[in-house]
Image (cartoon, rainbow, N blue to C red; front, side, top):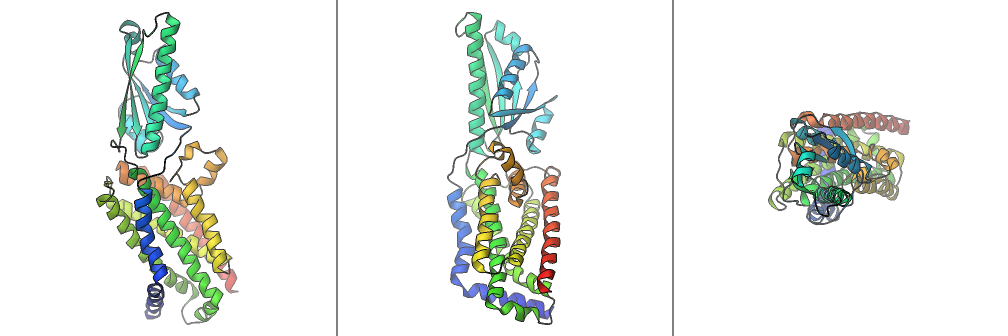
Amino acid sequence: MKQFIAFVRKEFYHIFRDARTMLILLGMPIVQIVLFGFAITTEVKNSRIAVYDWSKDPVTQQIIQRLDANEYFTVVADLDSPDQIDKVMQKGEASMVVVFDNDFQNDMLHTGEAAVQLIVDATDPNQATTISNYATSIITQYAQEVSVGSGYSDAFRINVDSRMLYNPQMEGAYNFVPGVMGLILMLICAMMTSIAIVREKERGSMEVLLVSPMKPIFIIIAKAVPYFTLSVVNLITILLLSVFLLKVPIAGSLFLIISASLLFILVALLLGLLISNVVQTQVAAMLASGMALMMPTMLLSGMMFPIESMPAILQWISSIIPARWYIEMIRKLMIQGVDGIYVIKEFLILALMAFVLLAVSLKTFKKRLQ
């Protein structure tokens, strides 16, 4: 144990002596959380919506068909009770619920007015605004067509009431804080860990470490511990900046948020170890980390662009990116404030990824030693 602690202390000293590395590790998260928290717009397609139709008359069915036929929406559920609205939102099954008033057709034909409510998940404010506007436009256009077809211009009007859940102020930071958390933790844990280990290989000092009395796997763990610690510091920094600077509330359990983050940090560390096993130079580690981790995390994890708007092949690829599941989990826990039961799927996927990466990393590491 003393030898292990000595190795960990040595790695901390090595990091602290490099001012540029410290600036990247501790300064970059602050810059990213501030910059990403205030900008970047998105475009949406194929948004999943659910329908709660009290009336179930021909007019509401025609409107539902209009929505489902449009490229912007896919109707995924027909709800039976109002209690199901929150559940489909919290499970991530739908990003909007369309609620038709009772006696919709009768109200429209006899009074000339009918009411529709759009309940939208506003954890991503850009997406919420966009799909709300799309749905309002489709419903309004339908009312105008029915009016013209009936021979009475402007005879019918459908009043659309939009309600934004979880983020009624439509703050962009609510969306990008979870994404930046995933990006920063992935960048520090995976990229910096892989570079640190490869640097030892490139300088020829790894062989010296491996012939020491300590087992090779403990040497690798000792090199990863400082980056794990710094990642925890960055996690705390991000949460503090989010709450006190960006005014993003932590609606869910702080314990679950930290637990999910620690699991994601473990996955990222194992990815860094895997990269270090298959490359021999720091340049190669940088390229592998950037191409295989950083860019997919930014583009395919749902951080910047809705996954539903991507082609099917990219949606499939995004399912093997750890940051996607972490970001989804943090949005549910931090913004929506859901219970742990609603993030079991994401948690189990990350746990499975950690197990697979651990097995593959250890196997490739042993082969490299032989």
